[in-house]
Length: 204
Image (cartoon, rainbow, N blue to C red):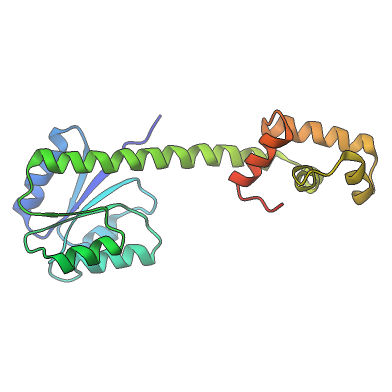
């Protein structure tokens, strides 16, 4: 089951938070609101999929400062900036720092939802890809020490006899381990096995 992404709203204006939350929830999306960047950081769980609707000018930590802090923490949460006082330099700065959009208040509800849904669609795709990639890499956890020793040699294209000589084991033993590696990883041939190793960034 796919996880439902959340729209995080960070704005010091209660009326704005309330209005944005209503629009988002009416569209059937999950959302959480925060009155400050500091409050958001205290509550946010690392790795939670979603996007951030972020005001720029707020008491305490500004929107730009929150963006910088999330980058420092290696949190890749897509950010849509919302501000009543935007200008070109501010927009350029935000986009260069990784923001996916920069909107000026007030924003028509249909435009805001269109931008949010486009971002969340990308978030879901990336999340599903990450889960699929992890499932592939988990297959390697079932390999024994000897199988992990043989694996990079197989992927590098070495023949069974070469591997047997290199590891000082019998040809038949290599054949057995090779068959087990393919079965455990679900790879039907060495090309698929090589792709699996590449996807999991396994050193060859």
